[in-house]
Length: 167
Image (cartoon, rainbow, N blue to C red; front, side, top):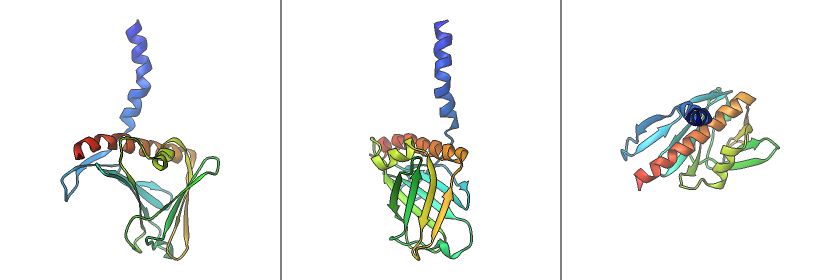
């Protein structure tokens, strides 16, 4: 009977592990293992989060055809959390007008504070500011907020396993 109850208490943990569907590949240059969420659609953008032994890279792709698709190293992204708190980051990608925006975090054994905030707080909106000060805003509904939180949590937790391999 004790085993039965212990199994029931572990089911929520096992069910979360099953939701974590990441693509495992090898980096084409270094041949190191790499994890990816693949492209997930959100409003007028798609998001792919990749992790390797050194960094976690968020790649936003703006899918609408407009002048708001140009980004350079001065472009910013703002994550708005429940309670109106914000985190602002600069584009870590190259200058482009293809609608590609990168945000990169170090992949460490202890999760950096900025990345920890993305894991623990629900993101209600994301604003991308281009090099001509044009703003693309992505508003997330409750289901999308949870989906994004799960994706980030999954890639960060699984990404830690790559650190040992890379060193």
